Length: 256
Image: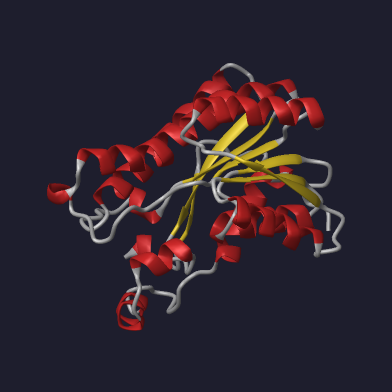
């Protein structure tokens, strides 16, 4: 398989869930994947799983806190020095925070922590990623947003606000790069309810999961791999005419 053969792709938050599934699929389709995460053990496990695929793709791990500007500069500089190019960036790292968490009871510190990772991390990724992609002849950025960017989220106030910001910022980056002729595309992915560690945290009991599952028109929750295929498409040249777009993968929930 070679949908992204010879591409160098950075995937943040790739130590579990959607990030891990995306990194594995990109590698299986021929990419060299730089796996980053604050969770060193999880990131190394992802690299090990990629090594066992026997698909021709390869990966390496680098520890990264996406909310820290110094980490972004170090990671991007290292990729350009070692690989000589960067063709794709998946800004996937994010947190949901405590659940439930209505805005009236949200502390300012907690609000800032969620936005620092979910919004500032994406901003920094684009700030340092775009010049590297441009220097490599162009490429694709995928920003992980959420169905929460379209719907009210009374039990996840900061999370919903952060994902709405990612949705809008993605369009800004896309139009800015297009206007300047950078050949850098930028799109957002909006997962619905996916059974990842984050999803299990939000829906900890089988009763809660069954109640929520009944609200999904297609009748079941998504998997990390469902989202990874969307990421693969947007990183690949198959999506060369897409920028500033929203790829919603939610089992029909946004259509209700």
